[in-house]
Length: 434
Image 1 (tube, rainbow, N blue to C red):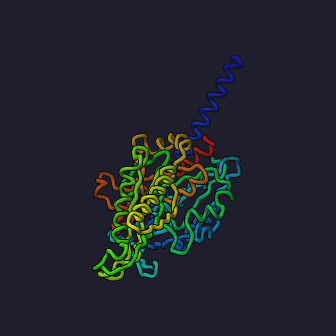
Image 2: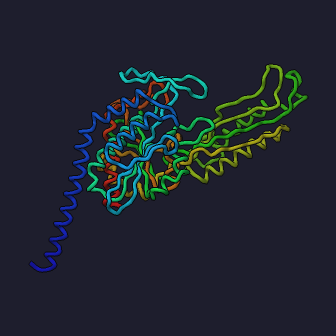
Image 3: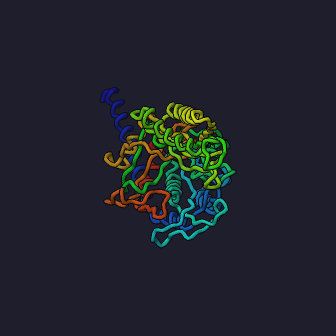
């Protein structure tokens, strides 16, 4: 056999061995996911029955930390108040990959007829409220716990470092407190661990089990809050000409805000939303008040459009008020940035998603005008976020109860896919795409 033939044969054998090893890893993940399914469901049901509000995830954090310690991982607690970090170091050079799950529940009274329904009550802004995992964060925690178990078991076949991020307060910290992904970033989590990328996933009650929805670029909107104070001149309700009526000015501003999106924004570029959620002012039916306050939300999927929209809101409100002799003071507070899927990372990991889910089950979706504080991670390092199906097969999405409602329901059959996706993304990124 000639020397060139020998070299070619060695290359073929080496490639075959690598392919066989990769296939073995994928098979291991599938088998271990199946073996862990009952345990993942058990974890989820326990968390569902014992939900905790934002920045109050004390028992949840204890359960997560205990599990990570049982795997022999390096564990950090008290991160961003109640967050838990598990670190799997393979001992081999490679990237640092973060996997994130959020832990908090919502002030919602559960109405779903399941044996493990929440009966928990807690204090929320001074009120005694029901508490429910009405957004599926219990499934997120359970799926990441499962992924941590499997990835620890195949540690020898990985490279680099895997960081399991159990994040508190995704729904927003209580008034006067800080928290969530923003606080984790501010505390230096990503820089301290030199994280290269972060993957995140969210269960969805309106996506069929077995499917995932994803989109390169802006997947979920930036969420900003605005407050407009309209200041007029108080007078008797029977003599409006003697004052400056901030109520009618506020009404005109509400209408003016709606024409910004419908008549001034290039909506073929990206969607945008301006909503007024609260109007307050006045104390009596026959007194025209001195001041009326408007409060609402702004949703954008493009940074330049976000800046432009903010300026148009200021201009619209102040000019309408000035036309009536009133004054409008506009404050805009940036809360959550755009959840941005890095296009290059999306392209690299596309084959992994299709292999795990099946090509027809990876759906390139339209953008979502809801917001996700995973965006703070994506603002710092290349990241990818997707939705995992949790709706029973065959159900019409129009009949599926939406998130943040008392009837929110997740089919636990969809959780195995979330576990497999996390594991496969780590394997492919750390061993093939680093």
